[in-house]
Amino acid sequence: MTSEPAGPRSADELEKEHRRLTRRLQRLDDNVRQLEQFQDSNSTLQSRLLTELEEERAKSQRLLRNVLPQRIIDRLAAGETLIADRHEAVSVLFGDVVGFTEISAHLAPAVLIEELNQLFSGFDVICERTGVEKIKTVGDAYLVIGGLGDEADHAATIAETALQMIEQVEARAGLGADWRIRIGLHSGPAIAGVIGTTKFAYDVWGDTVNVAARLEAASEPNRIQVSGTMAAQLEDRFRMEPRGAIDLKGKGLVETCFLLGRRDP
Image (spheres, helix red, strand yellow):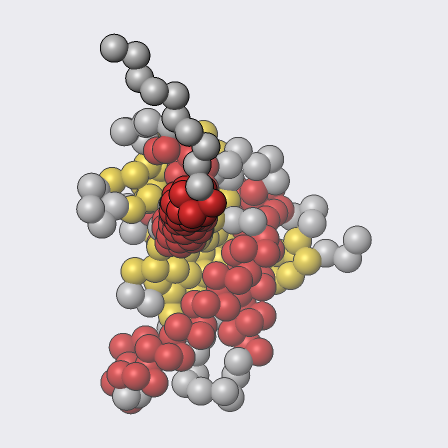
């Protein structure tokens, strides 16, 4: 059997078909619009997540930079797991607050911490300005090293840092407690590295650090005591006052000088 050819469609049928196609097109258009909105929303969400991730990464880097030098951070990021470096020549600054126990006995804890924070924060700014590496604070002691990045003129840089620290302490006279510091400077070899896994720290060890600490202990309030060997490196650019030989624990008699200031150009 052969089917009869379809006859012409009526106007009503054509109108119904038109409405049906229009509804289908509308649904397709709605679906496309929803898909575009989803893609836009997804792109916005992705962009926001990436921005938040970058902000958190930057925050982590800033926090890490407060604990480790940038060059050490870069080495850890590159996969190094054991960082221990021997430096044949560094310059060490060891500073300590004079009479800290007596000061702490007369100040409320909040006031003590606030004033000590202001003092040490000022030292931090000086270290940033001169380009030396603050290693740590231990109680009221402050340890700084120059030359860990193989800087050639680290002895002069650490001497300049010490002078600026004394100047800052003297400028604060009368603003709170009677803050004074002693400083010891010495140059020589040292070992630097990262220790710990959770509260890890970048630290420096060696006889050079020990001598700087003993020079500080044998110094005088608001004065900078320098080992004779280091003073010889500085005397063409800085004014020195020979102190003679003093007895340092474990080292015997050692020639020292007081660093007074900068020589005129």
